[in-house]
Length: 209
Image (tube, rainbow, N blue to C red):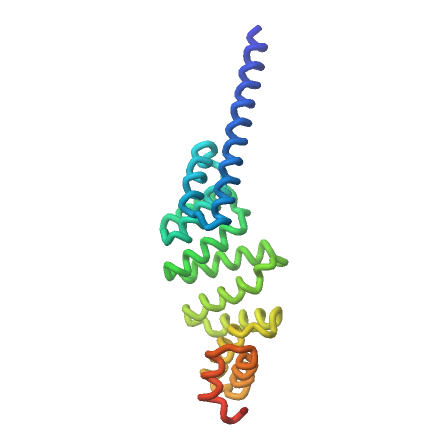
């Protein structure tokens, strides 16, 4: 008789847990739909409810972090990304979101660390080129010029006509007195319609025009 009671109790507990999980996932989806429409305040309300239903739902923290970041609550976003990654260290988009927050906070080393983890875990991601570009910007802020240049080289290997990467690589080359390679980059970016490249080429590249 006692065993039957325990079995019934276990079944009821499983059912309650399943119901709460379903409810949390539905709220997560509602929040995600609102995010896609740009309703970040509404998304946060749904994600708050999802987290109440399931405090271990890592994706809810991730999406709430993104919504907070979009609304300018940078510290709140950082806290949510940290929580998402404590629950699930393989939640790749949380590394990207946290990196962006750390860039805004001036925590460039932390941002680079997150970009490194993302690239290591997602070598074939469609976001690779953008991540490399952003990592180059962070390295440049830390005066790691060689590291930034190496990342721009990788970006341009994947996207030879990336005008921003061409402009930034040219600036590094120009500061190293590599005038002709710098001008080659600026002139190429100028042809792609980049105004900054055009200005720099007109000022510094009479040798190569």
